[in-house]
Length: 151
Image 1: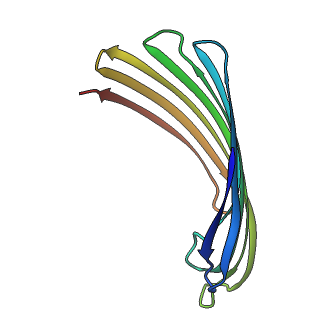
Image 2: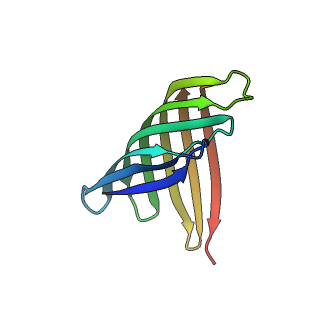
């Protein structure tokens, strides 16, 4: 675990110093399985150009379970959640200048399998489901497959 302080200039020229902390806990269930829990808290700088001042308070937590049933196969299951609280003031000239506050909640589920086909060839299959609940929120599914070659 650890903590840090980040310094940045706000859109109105104010200098901000805000905390950022994270922690993780790893537990091995023997040689073939492990569970990792992570958590973080941060106050972040603006990411929207139309915002005169903004502060995003973000809280994240997640679990990842890894299992290696054979020397050739590794599987991962990950679940994560984040909650953001955004406050700010839209800059003059924005479509509707003035105070803004909104929250967003995000959830992600990832299932991945990596299989060694040969000494230098790895097959990687992955599925990820993301759901974001906020203004302009979305839900999506992403499927990927790939081959990796080691030289």
